[in-house]
Image (cartoon, rainbow, N blue to C red; front, side):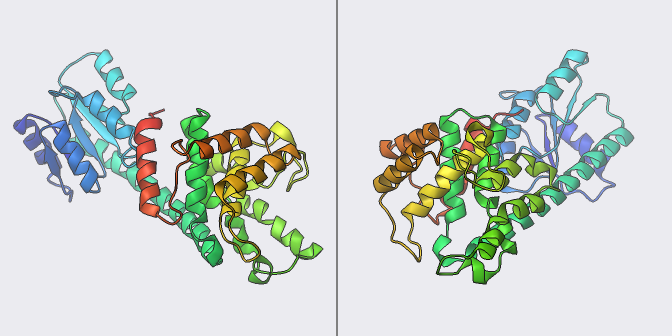
Length: 341
């Protein structure tokens, strides 16, 4: 855990209260030093003072809660300034617990244990999510022609979502949807998934089932509820001719429509066993023809193609398989476009 307090005696006092527990404790006197520790080390709990020089406790709390890498780290805020307004300021800034001095050692230990139990539960959820994402990427690796597909879809979809001014929840759903949209294909046999010729009716029925199976796989995870419409509906069509539900127009969830356009663009611009890669301009022209034919959302296609043609727009170049570059973009989006709440 990390103790942030400019006063050494306060840090020493907290250490003494917690010495009976097997905690590894780091200390920082100033906010910049604490942020550096958070960037380098895995911190499970932050204890900090409300009043600090430079960056106050609430400002520090808002900073780490706005960063995707540290937003789930619990914060215990303490102060010797009495008054309900101080507690409100701490809780509103994102603090998970608030204690007023003088501190009672038993109370501090109890609050710390409770926050660490919560942190352990969150870690378990993140581990379960990581398993699902690993499964999704395992599905992708079954086909060498789709290497990097998930990363590119996450990149394209979030870029379009940002240009439309979507909320944080929807942007996260798009990012996760880029990786999880085809997870149901884990239930599709290789003989069908990689068949070179046309699928017969029975095989096509199995292939189409991947949307519903993917939704079933992810439905138990409460943290993935916003992603379920992406997984289920990314093969619906604007004119109602898609699957699995035959949704039409704006009945199709917006996040699913965005990912669908990105999915088709990526398929058009990459080499597949049955075709060469199209240029970005040719791919945009194909998307526009499909929109004119009633297959795709015309406004979304227009937005997507405008971003691509601008060159310097948000769509940019995901460098196909450059995962560190995408991760860097994700961290940037978290800091700039994903405020708390």
